[in-house]
Image (spheres, rainbow, N blue to C red):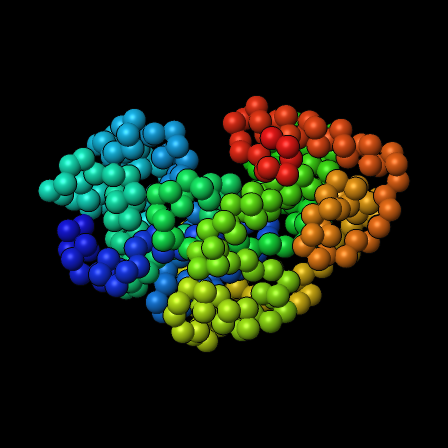
Length: 335
């Protein structure tokens, strides 16, 4: 199957190489909604969060120091729970290594994995939705210089309101040391961290490879937003994108969505209106400059002096925590 994919799928000869596009952004910003819309397009399949592609390359998991694939990578993938969702066998993976050119670069191997998934979905182009990959744009661009990136941005206060009621927060933003003392300010800097990394790395790639989508526009005018996205991707818009809820998937990703998939509605976009005023003030004291930069009007234009001092202290601790974990820091943070 693996060798047949490389000869039958026209992605190589048509100039498009998989991974074709990455949908990224801070968690709770609407990347899942966009993934469902784009995956409904008849020409493009979107994998749901591999969680290993750039991380394993940077750590050289199953790779040589130079970045070539070893048999260990296949074993590691087959033992990785998320990989099972792709339904790709050991035989398929081994065939990706059966090439005349030795050794096999990681980028070529992963492209083959995406091609295999595309063949199973009967689609030529394959991308991925992984919000956290917004922190890895330089690595992904180095691996696939022609891959496109779609960065979904949502009002950080709405992200915060969602995070504060999210059962999985402890596995993400909740890992940071400041979460226990001040979850609101921690969520603010966590949001800023992701948004700034994407906005620093993305524009340098040029308008042909980097595209921003506002969550608010996606839910208020999904058709116009999807048309602009398709123009960026280089293929015609299809109405199936806004009718995605009619084709709810099977498998674990489908089961994870409770009930029917609901169509996007404008009322989904203003969660922070239910936040206490003091929480909104703390959030805006922390990252008000980014809200201004993105054009989101502040609710509390002049936070109190004590709130500003507290935000400054949390920022220092958050930056120190990210740095200690080896995370990339935005240039704006002075790192």
